[in-house]
Image (tube, rainbow, N blue to C red):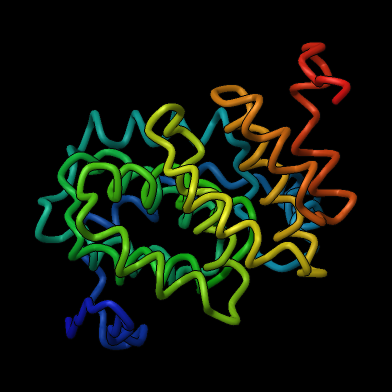
Amino acid sequence: MDREITGRAIAYSVPSANQLAMFPYLQTLETFYAQQADPAQATPMKQYMRNQFEFLGIKSPVQKALFKQFVTEHGLPDLSQLESIVRELWLMPEREYQYVALAFLGKFQKRLTPDYLPLLEYLITTKSWWDMVDSIASHNVGSLLKQHPSSREAVINQWRHQEDFWLRRTTLLFQLGYKTDTDERLLFALVEENQESQEFFIQKAIGWALREYSKTAPEAVQSFVSRTALAALSKREALKWLKAKGKLSSG
């Protein structure tokens, strides 16, 4: 895999489906999940995702139980195989296999290094939708950059200027769980860079990020919102928790 991480670019090559040989491990997994397919559930699940993805029809609680069972019976792959397995799962048509890919990443999260940032960028920008991007942003990217803070500036400075709004949404959301470790200056700068966006998922991310940070720094968030021209959706979402808790000041 060709990778380059600099202050301006993260480059990588994406293998095609015929370049990836199916691991016996994945053949077993695919058979295991296919046996649990429920076509009656697949249709409404597909409709919920606006018919963008195919589904086996396995609901989330069952997916979690199946993954736990599979790992118990077959173990986890070696770390050296993780990226190839995740990429192959991402190529499969049914959405459940992408959820499995994220479950595998979660199992190895503490062992992920900045070398995995190109993979995470690929996942964010391929088969993109909120169900995947939000999990990758807040869990995978957020945890990795917290563990390896020296890599944060390079990747965030690249992603924050991309036309792909899913990458920009990721920059807004990666600090969701940081609480007192949140880089307030960076968060507010990213919001300001995106405040005029007409994209729903950007406006929503701005509100979500500010709302979460308001639980740690209520006065700072209220002050920022009052002096920043945010979209109505972003402002409403940003102040929702403060309003519910009666913490909005009248000033």
